[in-house]
Length: 158
Image (cartoon, rainbow, N blue to C red; front, side, top):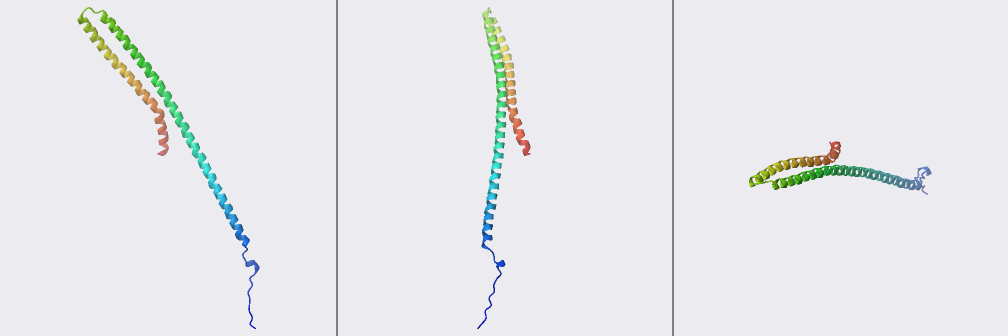
């Protein structure tokens, strides 16, 4: 008979099936840890974004309040000056009416009227100048907080 030689492999050389199963479980754990890390980073980024948005909203609210307060005070000043001008003009009209009642001739009436018109024209020019200055001051002071905020935003960009 012919002899057959069979080779037997030692047991140590065989790869166990359990090792593959553990490796898959470890991979799943690694993936879970990675997903958890990504989720934690996302939550942190969302919190940071919320904090930034909240900060910007608070700054904007403060800016609007400052602008409103400045504009309100300015409009109050403007209204006071406009009322003073109106009172001055009404008093000048009553003075003019009294002066007209005291004239004795047409020439005096023309003289009183032309004097009144000349005086009122000068007064109206002065009043308009004052009101324009106040309006410009209101615009500048109201725009100042906005200008400062825009400059604050633009400076970090450059």
